[in-house]
Length: 361
Image (cartoon, rainbow, N blue to C red; front, side, top):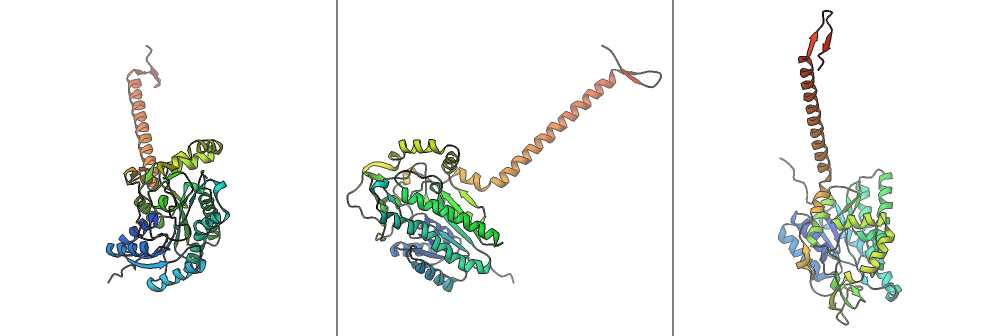
């Protein structure tokens, strides 16, 4: 009798809303056992119901990723409930939309503790378990802002840069140790999530993602794929490639462009409501779901992602087509040469000594 493969066990941080919520649903629909780690219990319990309705299993794990001990206890609880963790996805974040001069040291510290150190804490808890078993995948949800800082998001950009450097260092160590544990980054473009309504903001108008904007389900499908098809980094959306390429070629030009356009592009025309609550230190009550308020402006698919994830066989296909073209060209050349030889022979005559000479025209 054929044995069935046990369900995949996955931990997702920031699973109560936004990209994390969409990723949780994606894994749940594939029958996974999902650990849901975030601060907001309302969103976590709603995510658990969605996963179980889709055929997966869920464990609600309320915790703040800035607390390393809380993350470690959540990891132990997940393995006690469902078994060894196969995939760990670091996604939890907080941010502040503000010019640097209006930021406080405490705000920088808080963003760093969640958006950078939260990834470190999650990675350490995953590694303690995966390294001993010599298997597992850690997915860091990144951004083009891992490489390119933009105005009004200095704390978030700095934290994302730190995630990139930390992950590169760890990857080198895993390779050195000949470990089968993998770490990959998925760099996301602007995504329609609730973060633009619950992140702290000191801007005069409401925050918005910089177009083109994608729905969180597009990100979720990309993250699921990255967890099962190793590549050191994945870029989602053409704009992500454009930003990274532009920053590597002409970063000074990027500085000037963002200085001129980076403020207005991150704000709508709507005034910022006074005293709007934010989730910097405490989760907001209620279930915020995966989507923000930009559904009408957001895309449900990415052609660039399809090309990116299929680039290997597309490259082989292109080589195959090129090879066929070369064979066809070689065959045409051979036939042309043969035709010329026939024509040449028909205008030749034999001398008595057996030599062939061409007729003169």
